[in-house]
Length: 339
Image 1: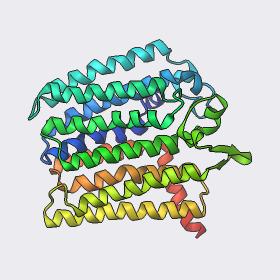
Image 2: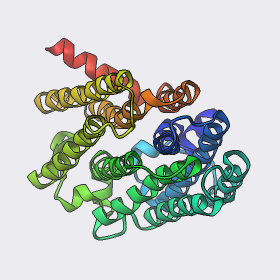
Image 3: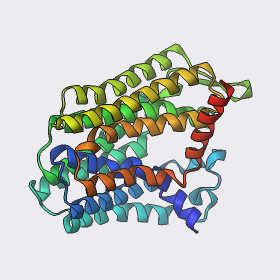
């Protein structure tokens, strides 16, 4: 039962969702109240459940031919599609109810904050419905990216007004989703997606699976990924250099060390993977964790202690039961041993 619940609402990915409104809230007002943090986490969890359950319902026929998802409860028939859809749709009023009850009106009107949350739901619903059916998949990747980024705007509206730091975080999230959906997710499901006529960014650029399950990555796709990755490295560094969070000298040193450390680890990973990929799943997960860590490293040093603890817990705890986290550790350790 617990394993089915874990896969049904995709708990392994919850951290990537839960951190977004907290980052947004801290970008507008670092001293976020504990009740607001709890409310933002609750709303993010409801949104997360909607996004992934609705996606699984929309892609069910495709997922039934994907061996990696054979154990998912929807694919196995343990949960009926209509029941899953009802649960997903119930998460929408639940999120708005939790927002009104736990987050409160704060400095912004409930209507303005609710608009950002509504945009997030609508954009993710649009992506789930047409994401792998649109002949121009970077467009639907962008729609999905805007949906996740709306959670950052929602968090900022919960505590104050959007700042330059808010805009940087929004830009980072958009580029992150474009990279993760266009490369990580698309390459993971490449063989099945191509066989079933799905449209993804990797397929659009001409990626294919060679004998021995080796991937052929065309120069265009590599260039697309490199451009996104360079921008993702530059944005947090520029945030520290410009001191967008308004840090004290001591906080700025901590942020510079954290952001610089994540950036250095990301570059080292990419160099190592280019030299000897070995385990693509482990390397990909390690890359994903670093991508998700950069905005946390930028924002966390200036937050109130309890809010910072909640942000770090939301970021790290969902990784612990995720088997791919340990694939990433084994890949990193294995590469070092081979060297």
